[in-house]
Image 1 (tube, one colour):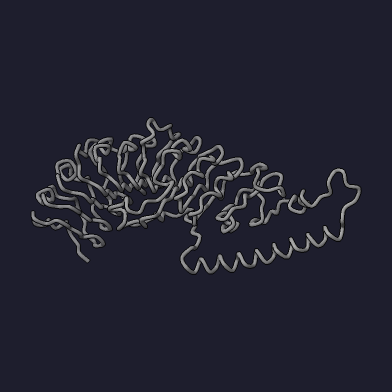
Image 2: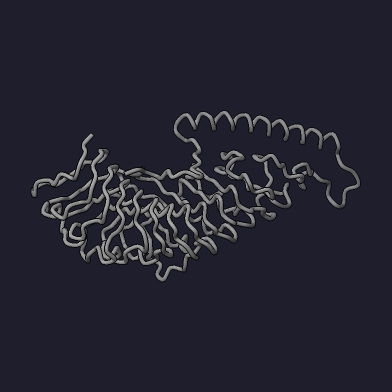
Length: 376
């Protein structure tokens, strides 16, 4: 319930946390006299004005800067210096405008960058890919625009585990070429995480590109990201089929492909659907129809539109070309066994799914919300 201006901590203070109060006004440059600060948390207050340049440019020890959910409005384009010790920067839910300061590239030990829910106007910051330790990048709910270019080096964003670009104005194809070099999403190494352990599940990996204007097909390259836990591509202009490689994502717990123009083509996944099919796979079978809604061209077992070709007798049951007759009793017995097995499998699958959800394996849909993997 603290109110009024920011209280300046003693010079010897290491950790200063006045979050979740009602403090107002600008941050006094006197805050820079606290030269021993390692973490500064002013989140969830009513502070205004700019970030004092001395705080981020001339401070030698500050590692964690959390100014989330205030009314800060700007920072200098050259706000950050080479050799900065900042590992966590959370400036989300403020009023920052204009372009990202290119001096952020000087924060070579930065792991966590959250700039969600501001008024930033810029293209995708490919230059952030040079940060060797960056694991979490959240730019959702801004005005980032244009196509996402190709990576210049295979080492860009190599440790990235969470990328959230939702609710912007990105266009062009999905950044499939980056999917080849997002190595940290291919297999999760829990030991390779320091500050993220406190804010995000240490084995968590997510991609959220929803509510943009991405077009084209979902790239097959997404199947390389086997450490992925959450995927949201909803509310775009994606076309074509759902790639079969999506079934390779054995760790996937949440998926939303709704509100696109997906139709698909016949693949080697099944002999029963000729067009517009939902691929079958260990993980895809766990998602209900809401994850694929507003794609009228799709059909499948989990959707209201059942593929008509599902009723076709499988080729292996048909007579050989040289046969003069079909063994009808044998065919009937085989089909009855197939139908009974399918019914039992569906019932057992639903039972196991409910049991797994009871252990926290619930499918989450974050569509149309400002929820992020973690609120620092």
